Image (cartoon, rainbow, N blue to C red):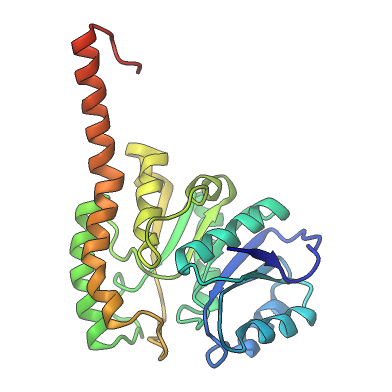
Length: 276
């Protein structure tokens, strides 16, 4: 699998980076919205990650990049899934820029820039290490969601709460921001899931901060979220989610516990005190 930067790496001095994963988004990318945001916000840099698109997405992104110094296109030749696309783009920003915060948004801007800037303001004034949007905290909002998404979200939410073990209302919202040091840890290793990587993000945050995790992160209610037509998640994908969540739980919780138990049993058998 080959990945490349579409053009020469740019010298970037912006403080804040946004990753936009894109897969066959030629009919959904609102370049006017992106352009307006860039024109009005000089301290943001946008990294579009083309995730092996088979339509005109890459060509559109490259043309947009040519017109904007604050835009870079990262091209993945093969489709690797949203989680890995976000990770690749995040690591590009961490490796080649001096951005102090990095986050991601969905390409359809279901969560818009106004809400994203609110999340960033919360991070700046609260000192939190990670701030993320929530579609479930505000009952008087203008969030529009299909009946299918509501049902799927409810079922997945129950499983997620059991796995991550921290009181997060909406793990799957596609708007999250991290301080540089936190992002270096969270996005260092590949995710196990193509679509449920956000669950792994919270598990990694919990592993990083331990019992203090809820003092280090903050969930913020979105003012607006729109269910845009053309989602890449099919019914077949959704039916696999419960199994994938169980696999994530086994990999992140059961296997480490079994490994620790095995180490303790060996230490007892050989009379050796396990390392702290």
